[in-house]
Image 1 (cartoon, rainbow, N blue to C red):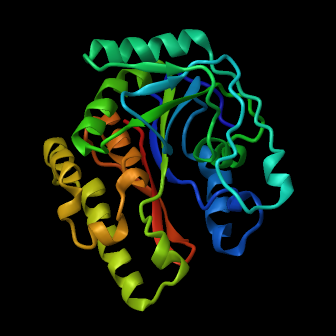
Image 2: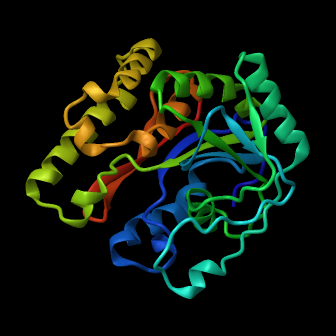
Image 3: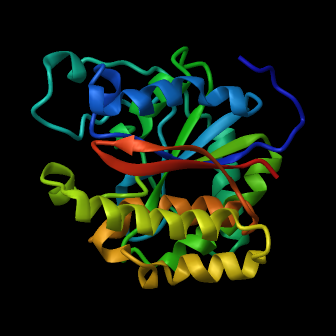
Amino acid sequence: MNTATNQRAPAVFIPHGGGPMPLLNEPSQQALADFLRQLPQHYERPKAILVISAHWEAPHPTLLDADTPPLLFDYYGFPAETYDYRYPVTNPADIRARVKECLANAGLPVDTDAKRGYDHGVFVPLMLMHPQADIPVLQLSLIEGLDPAAHIALGQALSALRDDGVMILGSGFSFHNMSVMRNGNDQARAINSEFHDWLAETLTHPELTPEQRIAKMIDWDQAPGARFSHPREEHLLPLPVCLAAAGGHAGEILFDDTVLGYRTFCVIWRD
């Protein structure tokens, strides 16, 4: 694993797979699981990781506020072993205080929750990325109402944490139409790919300005195939948080492959 440096921590958007399946050698998730295992090769070891997961929404940005949160097994119908996982990371009070400070400095309200645990959008990918559980992990909720502009503002507020060595990890899925994932066809996959072509252009095209990139993500539902790809956008919104935490600059696509038969990708911002 890379050693710590003074380099700015990255912002990274990942697909986290279906429930615990990336941990179960599920063939439809194997490419993703293999990628998540090697993802830390693409960044310096962070001081801590702040995760914004698709699986937590609250009226205001809400921070897990226990020193050692439990795991929240927010899935059902999987093997018994998947309810016995352990990921004993810490959630340091000083870094929690810094997150609250960043949100307050941006004029954003912040709530805390000392009882909730890390959901599967947190512990499943991190068990693959950092199996030693030796990097502190914080979790911050999405904002109810799912307004993309509100999540851009959230990412902008969190940007300063990257200078403190805190990695911003958006955990969702760039395609999340569960009905077609279960019963897909070539037409559905063509629409899926059309939306991903738009996302790739928006997030990586060097001639777009940061302001243009952010404006396009705020209006993401005007893109080709947008609402087909995300009938409800909770799995997409960690992405604009990461984009804004990176100042709207162009990212780099590290993973562009299929999960459950549909194209999805990971994007990293290092600057």
